[in-house]
Image (cartoon, rainbow, N blue to C red; front, top):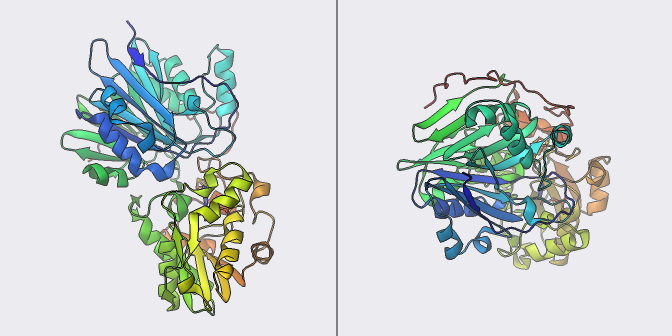
Length: 489
Ligand code: AMP
Ligand code: SF4
């Protein structure tokens, strides 16, 4: 008998691209699983504001899967009534961030299907690099796709895999996937969480009493009072069920390549990722920038939120006063999220307001985390001058962004990256600052303790750790029958 699946969804078959830089959160073994998941997603809201969703599993016979997905912010997507309907002690949630094309509810996650009489749900943060080849293969086998996200590929691959157990099938499916995947599945009442072998995107484990919790960033644990246990290892597959949590390492190990841009911009500064505080990393980037690109100025300001810690570091290294010269509206989403350029330019003005009292007549160093298209920087410089700044020296706490990301941080095509084919002086001519200085690659690597590798920095260097392959096959060491779990804390 099939599980019952309740869902609110609209089927919209418009086109979209495969870009997902998202947040994943899951709870196993707590009577309030869905409500805790909504709170966890709220803490991960910075990772995606396009849509939010939760799938819960109620331990009826057969199991009942409940799902609710909606466009917009977590607090708007879930009411007390919808959460009350998401019954069960196991829940998986997702916030999605996509800037390409139109947004569709059909691409909201977690995706939910039924397989062999059991619910099968999946939520993904990252981006596969062999989606097209995998989809072509699945299409040829008669797979019917209901969304245009690469996440659906996981479900089809797992459903077609030959392994006896759900865990075996998930491992086989993941073994075919290239690129970045921090992913969580609900297979029946089992929660299976995994990180790609390079560990490009974060994923960590926590506990709340006897319940287990999995989240993209540990800040999601803080909000619900859960205890951070550890990051999942690159290539780790973690299964959580009535027998507890067991870790497997089924893939051939490769060099770790954690996304350095998580530290630069994407993650919350109060998160600790890969053992390093994001706040400390940003502050160290700012200090290095202060040493590398000093400015003859009166004060330092940061572009809130992601530029503030780096601005503090810059002020520290340069012995200049740090002041609050920009305020950020709490009510506007990240400007990048608006797809139309005109909206984006307007969005900068809506998002940031200058504090004239701090700026008037002064020579200002303004620190931002990155320049992508250059829209924010151009508007910002003009705004600071309008507010009375005598000079504006723009400092960027990362190297020039010259290459697009294919691993789950949404960036525009290469030609839209303002620094792709321009020297810093040419970028500054467009931006209009009195001077422009970027952090060097060495400075960035030093700030994240990455001098000896361990990070992906392809958007700055063009050195992509995962190539684009036709039909990927990262062979799992166990096609039939699982290797014993690896010992983890
Ligand atoms: P732009 O205006 O296109 O140059 O974008 C740069 C601004 O967007 C900076 O202030 C960053 O804080 C922010 N930013 C950088 N990368 C991203 C990204 N992948 N998604 C959203 N915002 C970003
Ligand atoms: Fe992160 Fe840049 Fe690598 Fe993408 S290309 S994973 S944004 S470091």
